[in-house]
Each structure stands twice: as C-alpha cells, then as structure tokens.
Length: 138
Ligand SMILES: Cc1cc2nc3c(=O)[nH]c(=O)nc-3n(C[C@H](O)[C@H](O)[C@H](O)COP(=O)(O)OP(=O)(O)OC[C@H]3O[C@@H](n4cnc5c(N)ncnc54)[C@H](O)[C@@H]3O)c2cc1C
Image (cartoon, rainbow, N blue to C red; front, side, top):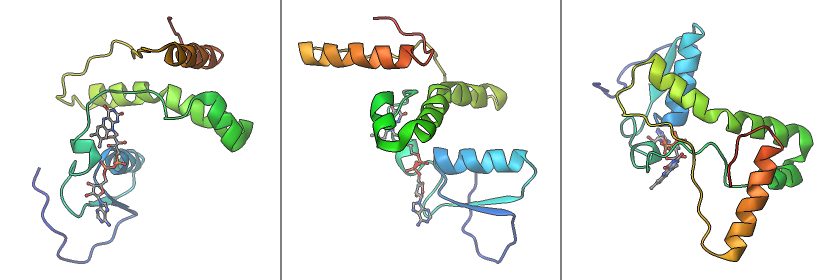
C-alpha cells in the first residue's frame, strides 16, 4: 500500500514504531480492540527482518524450555513457553482471518541432528516439549 511520509501532526491512541511482524501485529490487535493506531517506519513495511526471512513458522525460541526455566524462573518461563508453543496458531489464524496471500503450508516443524551430540540434544528437546503437551515424534 502507499506509505507516505508523516508530514503533519496527528493524534492517536497508540504509536507503533517499526512496521515488521512485531509492530504490525501489535498495531492490528490494538486496532481490533478499538484503538486508533499510527504505525511509523523509517523505511517501509517489511523492510527489516520480516521482509527478508526464510518464511518458516518456528514455534520456539532459541533456548529450550528448561533453559528458559533456569534463566527466568518457573512463572515467567512457563508463561513464555505456553505463548511460544501457541504462536503458530496465531500466525496461521491471522493469515486465515485476513486472507493474507502468502501460500501458507502447515506441516509441522522438522529438526535434524547429524552428530550423536546433536541427536542427544534433540531427544532432550523433545522430552521438554512433550512434558508441556506438545505433540512430538522422534
Ligand atoms: C535472514 C533471516 C532469516 C530468518 N528466517 C526466519 C524464519 O524462517 N522463521 C522465523 O520465524 N524467523 C526468521 N527470522 C527472524 C524473523 O524474521 C524476525 O524475528 C522478525 O522478522 C522480527 O520482526 P520485527 O518486527 O521484530 O523486526 P523487523 O522486521 O526487523 O522490523 C523492524 C522495523 O522497524 C523499523 N525501524 C527500526 N528502527 C526504527 C526507528 N528508529 N524508527 C522507525 N522505524 C524503525 C525498521 O525499518 C523495520 O521495518 C529470520 C531473520 C533473518 C534476518
């Protein structure tokens, strides 16, 4: 869409700086809740990582759940893990609800280990997610 530079003062309930996935998702949810929202980006929507990534919907963070637990304590870590484990639902839900033309494919998340150590780590990761109710096949 056309995204002209902001050239005049305006008033809004919320100002979002950055039109990547994070900013646009926040703006969308605020707008859906009835707020007037202005999104500003120094370049253009999708200019940052959101317009350059591999397009894989990875429902995880870099750290495994037990590591998050160690770093942030049970309450914060489990809340984070629960949010992350549902994150693909949010993404595919938005695609469906807004008919976003992006050829979505939802076929699970595949991880490969090519050394014994990597395979051990995958087993540990699988157990951690299984304990939290995520369907995992080894
Ligand atoms: C090469 C690559 C591959 C990736 N592959 C995947 C993948 O397959 N799957 C996956 O889940 N994740 C992947 N990621 C990560 C994912 O793309 C990012 O986590 C996500 O896009 C971050 O979104 P964001 O909105 O937080 O940031 P960004 O998309 O980077 O958006 C930030 C926006 O803020 C604007 N901005 C910054 N500073 C200012 C300022 N001061 N004033 C105004 N505007 C400003 C920028 O112009 C930019 O548009 C990949 C990342 C990269 C780089």
